[in-house]
Image (cartoon, rainbow, N blue to C red; front, side, top):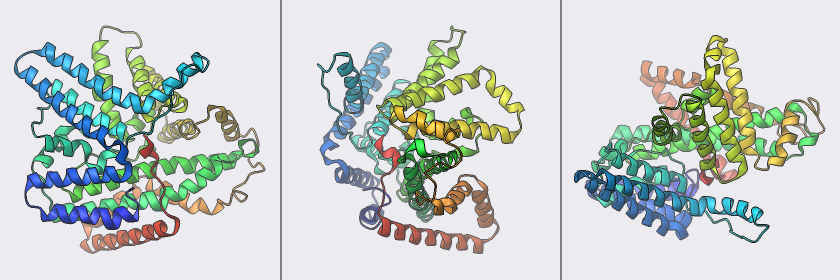
Length: 472
């Protein structure tokens, strides 16, 4: 039941909001969140619902056990329980997401004597696992107190707005909202605005750009000129941003409907002037998770090492980041690619970049990011060479395949709109307009209503496509 679907917009969400707002008791409101989240999960993935429920109970029990050991001044026991809790969470993730990948490697090494099949992924398992791990690690570090109310913790772990694609939240950021859920008219108004903005990004921009990008990436690269290749890559660069950022906006909007303030996940990443800055602006909650729970502990554990410590730690983190995205070689190599670039920037390139004109810094960053999306989008490693050759003009600027033959020439206006909405210019204008004049604020709300109607027309006429990051 994607957010950009008729079922969600006109059946599920209205019923959930009506029930939630009619319930005055905070305990019952948490129960409403939990039940609605379980219904959402069951609608999409009933078969794996028990897996998530077992994981919830295990994280709840481990949190209590670790907290009890710390209260009794037994850090050794708490540390062992923490390692066990982390292992259990990772084993569940490994079994469903990575067993087939590593089984395939073993099958190759054993000449086919070992056969392990890929398994269907439980809904949102990567996000769900990282959320649970953050809770366990925070309790162990005494950053967070163990939650003794199972209903509160379960509501946090399976909350449907953030379950499928995040944002990845820490319990301390939502503890107050969960223990005392309140909804104001401001929450409802801001939630509606944010949700419509996300819906427009996903349905009007991302889904339109998907058609253009797919047309290019599914064509014969050997017959493709550089113009078409760059057009397709630009379309995908904008598509993946608006697809994921659109989901985040909708998730934050739904969270506001329920009185929760979910963290931001994007901050106009394509205006970055280095790859380091890009990863501070793109999927910010995932970057923050790896920085908090992997990079900083690695830096501390290896503090005596002086040679290439930071660089090797960055490479480890982004190898894991690539693996988190998917159990395939292209994601693994995509993570290594960004890890190497970040390691080079940390070795002195970042200082050199700051001395260059801002325009060159932007060009450097965009080129490397777009090159990274080639590795992300094309899952068959054997196809990388053909597309990269097309990009650098090995087949000329215009090959046998053109925008006209692919019937995607008319997507130029969508590309232009995508570029405009990927920079903060329009956001700054609307913020100033709302602050300076109430009339302009009302006009902008009517404009958003128009966006909602247009998005509905798109959904009704073309259907909806799944979110790119939902597969992770």
